[in-house]
Image (cartoon, rainbow, N blue to C red; front, side, top):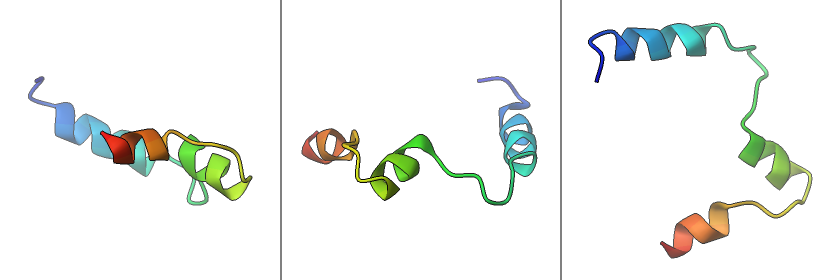
Length: 42
């Protein structure tokens, strides 16, 4: 893992919009199927 991996990830997160959501959250909010059920079964 690169030595700057953590700081790079934090920088990306800090650049995200405050009201940003993940695609999984948007799918769940829209009542669409998501990969959550598959992940729970693993």
